Image (cartoon, rainbow, N blue to C red; front, side, top):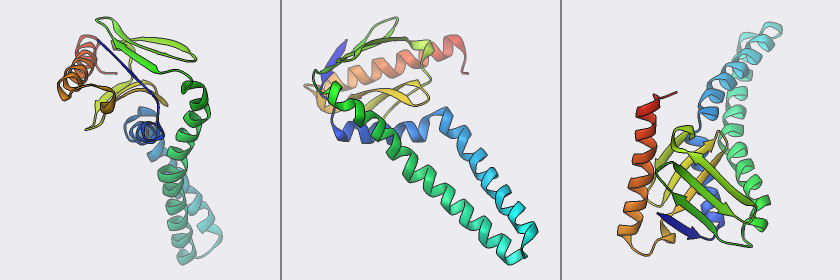
Length: 171
């Protein structure tokens, strides 16, 4: 089972947003970052008054959340956009097999066994297979000829990933 499509900015934005929300890397980083920012505010508060400490802590948290919500997802998109010129020279082919998923594009090919994926998910318009904490194989709905083809592909991809998780045990 396979699909071939061209990469678009909409695909890149969707991948950046999905990876940011579902990557184990970001899920672990957000609480650590927030605690670090609050600790910085508390340390600064030792040298100033309580009101200033509270204001500094709130500013630190607001700044940190701004970085996590705006800057990091945009940097993921920028990273992929930089490689986009190469990727656009040829279509992207994603092939699902019993053993795993293969992605072929202008830069080469990648094969990942189902159990080695770090995550998988489906939205109304995309299937995402998380290859690493910052990279996902994406399959847009628009690449399929019919809604049935899309549904079969998405169901097979997600069920294969979930079966592999059940066989190995969730990390």
